[in-house]
Length: 295
Image (cartoon, rainbow, N blue to C red):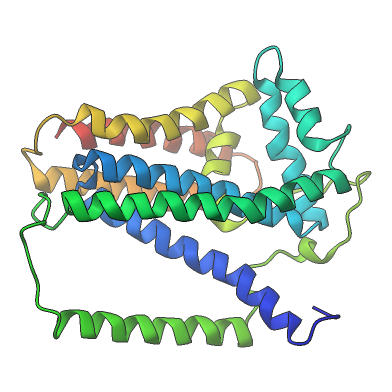
C-alpha cells in the first residue's frame, strides 16, 4: 500500500473483491438449493468442490495479511488438523514448518494461494461443461435444457444490472474500503498475546458458529466435516423428482435462514445464551436438510 503507486486501491479491490465474490457464490448456491439443483448430480458435486476450494483459497489469502487477527485465526484453523488420529500433530508441524506459524508457513501459504486458482479455473471449466451438457435447475424444479429465452430484453436487463452492481462495488471500495475489515487486521503479529475474541471473515462465520456449538474440538471438526459430506450425499439420495415443490422451497428457505443465523452466532462472544442457541440451530440445520431431501 505504501511502496506501490495506487497500492491502496489494488489491495482494497483484492480484499473487498473476495468478499463481493463470496456474496455472489453464496447467492448462486442458495438459488441452486431453492430450485433443487442437486438433481443435476454432476453439476452439483463439482459446484460443491469449487466452493470448498474457494474457502481454502480465501483462508490462505486471509492468513497472508499477517496481522494479529489473521495470525491467530490461522493458528486455530490449522490446529484443527491435530484431531486426525496418529499423524495429525505431525501434519500440523509440517504445515507450520516449525512449532508455530512463522515466515516459512507464510511462504508455503503464498505458493498455495498462487497455484490454487489455476486448479479452480480448471474445475470451473468442467462445471460449465456439465452445465451445458445437462442443463441447469429452474423454477419448475426440472433441468431447463429445452427452455430457451430470447437474448433481448432478458439478458440486456440482466447485464445492465450487473454493470450497475459493479460500479456500486467499485464505489464501496473507494469510499468505504474498511467496512468489512477487523481492527485487529492493522495490528502487528504478537505470538505471546492472543486476542480475547477471534473471529474469521464473515464468509467463514457459519462454520465458526457450528464449531463453537460443540465443546469438544474433535466432535466439532467431525460436525463440520459432516456438514460438508452431506452436500455430496445430497444428490445421491435424490432418486426421483420432488413430489412437493412448495414444502421443498420452504425447507430451503429455512436452511438459508439458519445459515445467516449461524453467521451471526459466529460473530458474537461465546457466552450464555449464544452457545446453547448455536447447538440448537446446528441440530436444526441438519434436521431441515433431511426434510429438504425427503419432500
